[in-house]
Image (tube, rainbow, N blue to C red; front, side, top):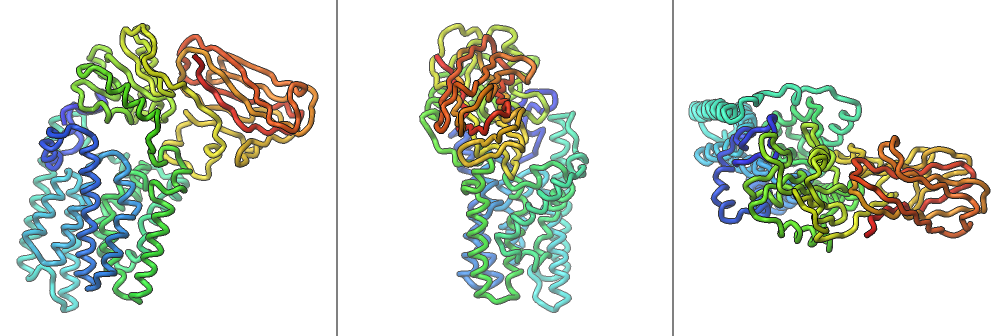
Length: 567
């Protein structure tokens, strides 16, 4: 609560400047007992799982069928919106499904006191849950009126009692929202209470396609039954509206925490929507559609892993343990500037940031990973790379360890590296020319690129004869000074005369460090030739690029392009 990771004028000194969350305050004693990100992730997972119980109970209440209700509950646990919310860091949005499902259940049961308590718990999650509560109150008004018009039994009883109950909750919600806005503005006076640019944006054709796929992903696992009973989607309307109008892509893409805000209404609506149909067929369709959605869209599915390396299952390796080891050896009272994805591992320190405040002395340590896109990206435009290069200009930082690009710099350090797994990167044919671009892949750093005139095959690039020009380039990564080896695995079908390929090592194409021309007479046809080149970098290079340029004198097959740091 005390320290924001981004210590800049654009971010508050406390989390209370971002969200007013009594729920988070209630978790502080638990975090005091176990001050670890793992505790927060365990709490989040538990909170995201518990709504399955209430969805089952809602299913039984509405349909009277336990087996069908169990399918809905299991479907929720396999739902893309549930799994991706659990996958993406720790966020307050992950607690919303629990309190929304409780609100639905207690309303349908006619339990007035528990209904109000559930709404209060939902408000306590964070101040913007007010919009969900208000939308739910409108839903109750509409549904109660609809039941009364049909002559059916109202869930909450007489009109007068319902009106008093709901109007009281509206007043409480308004007071809570105004009070929380005042608290946040007091903590962070620069804060904007409303952000129209985030609500209404300029939508591209690509944004429109992503939005359509987003709503399809939310609906398809439930066999689109939610659309049979749109009334129950009313509590999701505020954030469905936001996802429809904004151009801020995390609000309408599945691999973020925001689907948690609207996931439960889709299930409740599907439960009601399935009442008017062949029950046996609905159960079969639900099983098939949920299973398919899990296999295709779950975070750990083979399909999603192919879209992005950052979505692959994080299987620990020897390098993982080595990174943990070097982190554990840092002094407990040291100040640290850490890349955003590394920050949770050092977040319990008194002085730790992802963006360094200008009014503090330089940090004792700087920790970053040049092979991770977050090194090159920050939401406010000042990247970790910018900060690292700025501090390196002072000349006071030395490299303590390098675990394949996971680097630790120490102020005033002049010794040798305490741990090293050589930095290495290669042209991966599975990563170039993807049919789908994920959020992190919109940054060119750490990526190789291949032009359209080069054919990307399963295990090699095929470069046709008479094609002259660039045939690959990238990945624009930051590398330390040292010696490097470049290995090229090359095949030609027949012996060719003249030059075949240029290999260039440069910085943004304007500063050449090394170049090599491969002659046709040097290459044995009909076999893979392994060519090794060495080059030296005398200083930190902000954006190293390896490029290949064909002369068009022969058909070429490039099987590997590997770069590795040498002792």
